[in-house]
Image 1 (cartoon, helix red, strand yellow):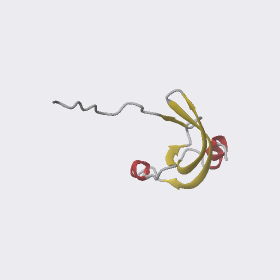
Image 2: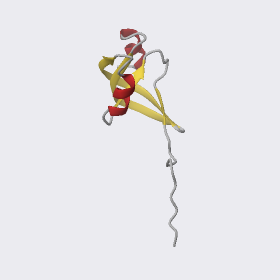
Image 3: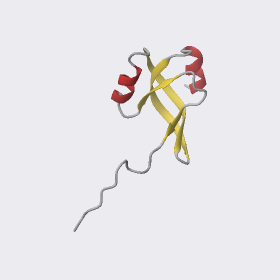
Amino acid sequence: MKWQDVRELFPNQFVLVSILEYREEGDRKVVDEVTPIRTISEQDANKEFFHAKEGTCVYHTSNKEFIINIRRDPLMKVRRLN
């Protein structure tokens, strides 16, 4: 299902989706095809976001595009001391 279709079915809601198809554009994943799993309450959205399994994501349907920013650099670099 296209993201636009999910937005029309679940207006102004958080939705847990399974990501089926995406394309990478630089440091972004632009999601094209998803399967909605269920809606998420606003109170539970943060918790569900961090507990989402690989290949799934919580996203709000107010967003016109489904974009995931990719972090390629580690949060912390550790250098070995000899």
